[in-house]
Length: 165
Image (cartoon, rainbow, N blue to C red; front, side):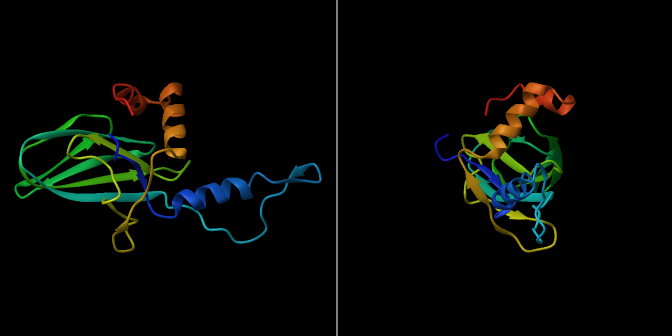
């Protein structure tokens, strides 16, 4: 979709790439990591959005992280794994994506006609209030996601192969 983006906690894209640069320095013929304080990216985040659906719709969540999708309705909630097509009935629904990753900053891509990842989603790191997500059409998320799928690292990656991002 034209208005569908990879989403992440705001600022983590920049923090991750600053860390990569700061720890890739070579001086005097050997590794020379930064000798100043540098902040790291958040490794556990949640992305949230509430929809008022007029008709049944489906969506799929892809991520470079481990985690799940939590679909909350007035009558209860249900968890789904990443990479699985999720169908929801009309009415009010809250979508929460819980993601954790230590190799890179967690990010997600939600593919669907009605429910999709865009700049209206909110993010939280479980210690601060919700904030608008960081978003982009091309990012490190795309690269690490594709590398993990191609490498077939674990069972989670096998589920990802069914989707197209």
